[in-house]
Image (cartoon, rainbow, N blue to C red; front, side, top):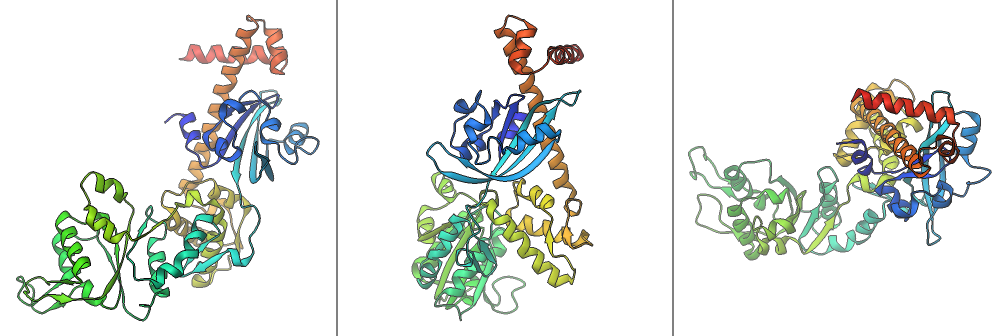
Length: 435
């Protein structure tokens, strides 16, 4: 994967400007945050496109350029073409040449919540903590869904909290005093999974020395949570469908049906709709378990929840370990907010627990985080620098072609001294000779 491909897949906007503040690179996420297309942005100044509230005399980047600094973090608001104000967290990294002259920079932008919501807009139930709009919408309908007896399907990537939502539904339901039984359908082989679901009677097989009730019997008048239901084999899908249709099943080795009253909540990290289309999951079973569907967003799509969750985990682990860790430093938090979390909330929880083990201070610092996060930070910075060099070379060659190779005119348009341009061209020649 090259540098540009890495930048295109980031969860934050990346904008690269030249020495005259003109945009020479604009990634996909920057388009989504600013509502400007790449075509509209390229060639214009960052001031024209972002329209930040502190552009002009108060521009932190201009002050950084004058003061000779290389890095600044600040909060601002991007104004979209339709006049909306989008709060963002901005990091500007200056690019300088060998003479320490300003020659451009990299702007990264991450959208932030409009404001810190009042307590009523934050929801915490059974470990679910969020201020994300999509999560809050699900939590709004949670009581009504819970009070019904409808089957619920919860879809989402691993680590997004599917079981927490399932437990919340059970706790709010009319079955809350009944049993809660959970089974991971992907953790057991088919033969063992069948006996776990439906149980068996004595003598059903060699080691069956006594009757064993299955999960359906154990969940009678309660809730049965079937995690990773997309891993069920076709034969077990048929048997599960029969229980959902008739409310009864036959344990292994028995001839007598057993009637049960069970609410089913299912979860999967797979796309069951696609599995139905390809014949890997029965459509009739799918519609039985999918009366109500919750689609949980991954953590990378709810960055506003990262600070909430980090501080929740800090409080929890600090109380558990009696460590005097109170909070996390802005630098460490910034690293977490730039990470995509393929393992979602579960991965964030593990990262915070690791940090608390390593931390002997009052605040978690970057060096307390797992080493792979720090390695990714360095890789990201290298990718940005590499892309900046590529863009710089491309811009120089383009301007030179425009002026027929006249270096003085090209340097004037680029906003750099002609000796600086000659030095850059010599460096480019040496690079090409190397290859």
